[in-house]
Image 1 (cartoon, one colour):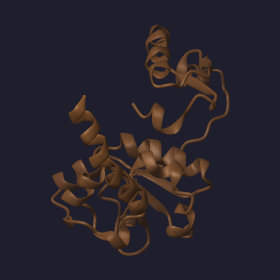
Image 2: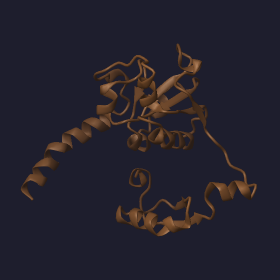
Image 3: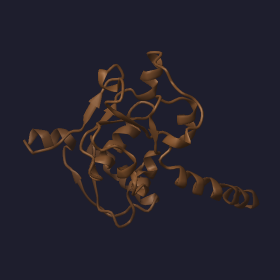
Image 4: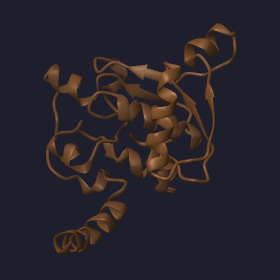
Length: 191
């Protein structure tokens, strides 16, 4: 789903698939959005890699009940859509949509790299992608908040609603997107 956000025709792509039968479908989907520099596929997926005894690294995960989330010990980054963030987020969390992370060249200066960073989304899928992106950007102490905001709310943990400009790291990108939106709607209405 996020292939177009993180890759283009110049980025070499290596696919990791659970089943070889998914290769044709994955390539077709990526090619339809202009991602066609597919260089290879990992035979046997992660299981095959592990079975071969090859080295791999993993990022950390946290439960929403983790003590590390209390107080100021951990920074929290919410990577959902801005509308989802405004509907309810963890107090003090920062916001940057996962698709905008590659554009946020200043993200390293906007987050305290000395503190561990928990990344959340709705259930953990976008957060997992964001963790991977942040690791590539040089962050080292990054965790996926398992279950995300769905688990957080399920346990009746407190949320803050509404906009939070002070904690919205991607507000310049959002403003640019919003300013282009009326023109895009007008074009669609004419067609």
